[in-house]
Amino acid sequence: MTTNPTHAPARPLALITGVGRTIGIGAGIARQLAASGWDIAFTYWSPYDERMAWGPEAGATTSITDVLTQLGASSTAVEADLADPDTPTRVFDEVERDLGSVTALVMCHCESVDSGLLDTTVESFDRHFAVNARATWLLIREYGRRFAAPEGSGRIIALTSDHTVNNLPYGASKGALDRITLAAAHELAHLGITANVVNPGPVDTGWMTDEGRAQVLRQTPLNRLGTPQDTAHLVDFLCSPEGQWINGQLLMSNGGFA
Image (cartoon, rainbow, N blue to C red):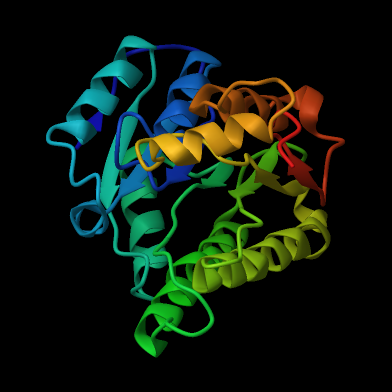
């Protein structure tokens, strides 16, 4: 699905992964960047939502695309199983065909299934690392190889988590994601690209229980839950010219959650 509203001057293009639900952090970031003058390419993978407790959201891709169009952005949506090592190349091929070269790569995709040290299966462990770590590396590699935007405009941002207890494969693979992304701040510096990791803390996008919400509130000095918009504002700043000097950082954006 591609939309191309007429607008000038040309807008930079952000590729955002993991934009499967309208309530999600990825969708919030897409809306914010569109409002700030970016065109948006985004990926989604419906079979992941089908496996999760919240289930798939019918019409989500169309709804997200409609909002982006209303905000003046051209957009394209690519269904992408990032557990497949060939997918990142295909995603960039489709995005470049539809909208041109990517200026900002924002990675919100994840595999997240709770399990601990004693009950995690090898299959689950491998899938978490394939999606959260390997796909992050392959997306960054593809982005770096193809980067053609003006020097100083390139941005890589990945979302992470420090949750590890009873969430072994997710937390461990997110730790690998951190290191892979932060390496790009040095290895892609010659292209004028910055790379940062954002930890948004617990954001209720439909997965929290009532008990979980209460616990998060007790641990958050500002006494509210994080929202996708909180993360979107920070990503928007990092993607702006004013955010260029922030580079190679793992940023906590969680209201003081401890």
